[in-house]
Image 1 (tube, rainbow, N blue to C red):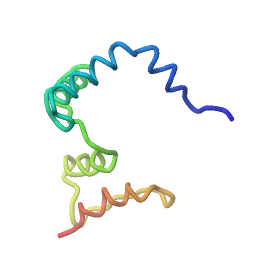
Image 2 (cartoon, helix red, strand yellow):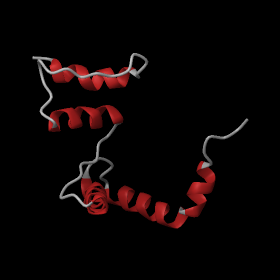
Image 3 (cartoon, rainbow, N blue to C red):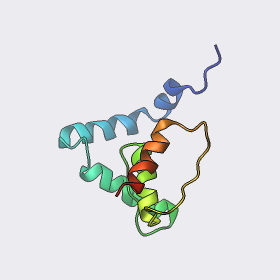
Length: 98
């Protein structure tokens, strides 16, 4: 088998940093939102050179937020490929619900 990625190698390369981050999350009691997410959003926005970034819990949520940010709504057309994942459609469909 040919591995697509070597997660063990990636983890080993960043083990100390990853373990510290995981412990900060566990010790804070905030697995959703919290200071770590705020820190990520601020650092990612700075890296991108933009004023704000928003972390999302899934790709579906990220697509939905992107459509909302672009004011996509009922009457607008969203085109995707025919062989897309169902999650893509799940992100688009609520945008068009009235």
